[in-house]
Length: 193
View (cartoon, one colour):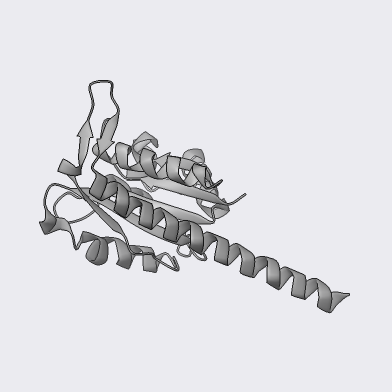
C-alpha cells in the first residue's frame, strides 16, 4: 500500500490548517493510501533548536519520511513564509531526504498577498532537499476554513474542490510511479532469468 506522510508546520494546537489536513487525509484514505502525520510542534523543542540530528524523535520522523512514497508539506504563512517551527525541522532532514518523493505543498494564510509563498518559500527548500516532482501547491485562505463549536472544521466548497484536485493529482502520481517501479522490477527479473 502506498504511504503519504503529512508534515504539519503549524505552531499551534488548534489551527485551521488541521482542518485542511484532516480533509486531505480522509480523501487519501478513501483512495486506499496509508497516511501518517508528523506534527513538528510535537517534536522536542531542544532537538529542533539545537539541531540534534541524532535525537530519537528526529531520527524517527526522518525514517517516516524515508519510507513515504509522497509527502504533504503544510504550514500557515507568517511574514510571507512557512513557520519557523517547520524550518527548524526542514533543516534536520538529510540533504537528499526527499529524493524520489512526490511532494504537495499546502499553505494557509490570512490574505491573497501570501499566495506566492508556495512558489517563493516552499519550492526552493523542497528542491534543495531533492524532492521531485513538487506538485502544484494549494493555498487556502483562513476564511475558507470555519471552526465549529465541536472542535471540527467546515471547509468552503471552493477549497474542497481545489483540495480534491490536488489529492487526485497526488494519487495519480503515486500510482504512475509505483506502476513504473513494478515494470522495472519485472524487466529486471526477466533479464536475470
